[in-house]
Length: 234
Image (tube, rainbow, N blue to C red; front, top):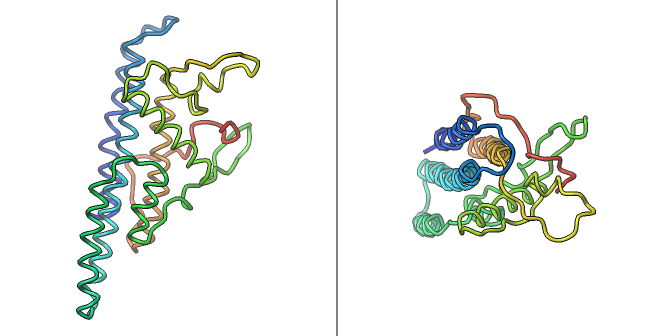
């Protein structure tokens, strides 16, 4: 597996999220009020988008492992180093099998085992407040944690989701409002979540390919580089 393969797998998996958005728009009647079926689709997009991110990280870890082993096999290594690398491969595969929560810290821990730290690559420019602003790795880290918190709440059937800034209902809530908000996942949130993880995959894959000396992966479409909200709102 190479880095291009990881992107190809991600694009294919993300199609299910895009299909759920199409279904939502097809069944929605445009009326006011909360519609349970459409809300379930929105929640499903968040869960599946997070799952595609997790699968990408696992695929990327395998691609970087394979690239490392290819370089080792091309060199004439002494027996001690060869034995150490066999043990490294065993330990790495064990860590890969145990990878289940694709948070920023867990992702860094896994990929650092092959010498690649993805977090510094999580940066891009986007428009906000009528101008270009720089999205920082820490802001991407925060947004990812918040989306994974929402994913956790949805997957565990929580009646009340976390009141986090990535949800439009939380950002729309007047600062003078009292009590805890009871946000739900809107269609715009579902789309933002999908686009966010796709942007993170784009910068991560580009940097990983450069790290192992592979061509930058290609995409079947232009990837919008968006955080999903004004970074200042995090």
